[in-house]
Image (cartoon, rainbow, N blue to C red; front, side):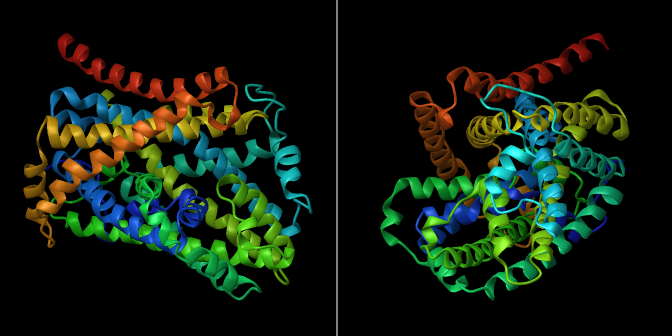
Length: 494
C-alpha cells in the first residue's frame, strides 16, 4: 500500500484542478484578448485550441501524474532517466510565478477593503501608482518596501502556507471546496448586477459581435492557443502533481474534459461581467465601448474602481465582491502553484511536508518582498512576461516533443488513460499532441523570440529587461538542470 496522500473525493480533485486553472488571467486577460481578436469570431479558434491543445495536454498531464504517482520531477524521471530536469524546470517556473502572484493577490485584498469607502477617490490611476504602490520613477530602482502592500502580503502567505501544511485532503481540497463555490456565487452576483446597468447591452454587443475577417489572421489563432495554454495551468508542473494524488481508479479523460470546460465557462462568464461593466462606463462617459477596453492590472485596479465610483447604489459592496473574487481566484491558483515545489522538494530530499512548505514557501515569501517595494510593479511586469513566454510556453513545447517524439510514450499513456476512463482516446489525441500542439507552440516560440530580439518589451531599458526578464527565464532552466544532477550524486554516495 502506498502512503501517498490522496484526494478524498473526485469532486475535491476537480475543484482543485478548476481552482488552479481559474485564476486572475480568466478575469482580466480573457475578456480583452477575445475582444481584440475578433470578438464573437474569436470563440471559434478558442474552442479549436481547447479541443486540440488544452484538453489533450490536460489528459497527458493527468495521465502522467496518475501513472507515475509523483511530483513533476519524479514523474519525468520515471518516464525516462534523462528527462527529470524538465520537471524541475517546470517547478522552477512555478516558483518564480508564486513570488509575484502573491503580491497581486495582496493588492486585491487591500482594494477589497478600500471598496467600502471608495478610498481610491476620483483619480484611480494616480491613486494606484502614486499613493498605493508609491511607484519608483524608473525601472530598476527598488526603493523601500511599501507598508500598504506588505500587510496584505503577509496575510496571503499565512493563509496559503497554512492550507499547504494541512495537506492534500484537509488543506488543499477543503480550501477549494470553500473558495470555488464562493467565487462562483460572488461572481454570478457581480455579473447579474452588471447586466442590469445602463449600457450593458452595448458592452456585450462589443464583446460578442463577430469580426469574421480576423479568422484568417494567424495571430488570432496564436492568441487563442496562448490563452488556452496560460489559462489551464499546463506545463506548470501543477496538473502532474495534483493528478498524482488521484486514487488508482479515476476517470482521467472525463476529469480533463470537466476541468477544461469549467475553466472556459468561467472565462465566458468573466467576459460577460467585465464587458457589461465596461458598457456602463462607456455610456456614463458618452464614448464608444472600444475607448474604455483594457486588460491586466489596469483593468482590475484602475478601470474597475472607476466603474465602481459611478454605480448608482451599493457600489462599496459591488467593489468588495469584485476584489474578493480576485482574491479567491488568486489564492486557489497560488496554492496549486506552490504545491508543485512542495511536492518536488519533499520527494527529492526526503523531508516532511511541513519542512518542505516552510522551506520552499518561506524562500518564495522572502523573494516576494522585492515585488512589494516601490519598484515592484516594474519587476513584476517584466518577470511575468518573460517567465510566461519563455518559461511556460517553452516548457510545454519541450514536454510534448519529449513525450511524443523522443521517448515515444503516447501510445502507452493512451492505454493507461483508456483503462480507467469512460471516454476512449482515439488517434485524434495522438495527432493533437504529436503534430498540432508542437507546430502551434513552435510557431509561438519563434514569433516571441523574433519580437523580443528585435524590439524591447514595453520600452524598458535593455539592461533592465535582461536582468529582470531574460535572466529569470533562463535561470529557471538552469535550476532545472542543477536540481536533476543533484540526485545522481546522492545515489553515488549511498
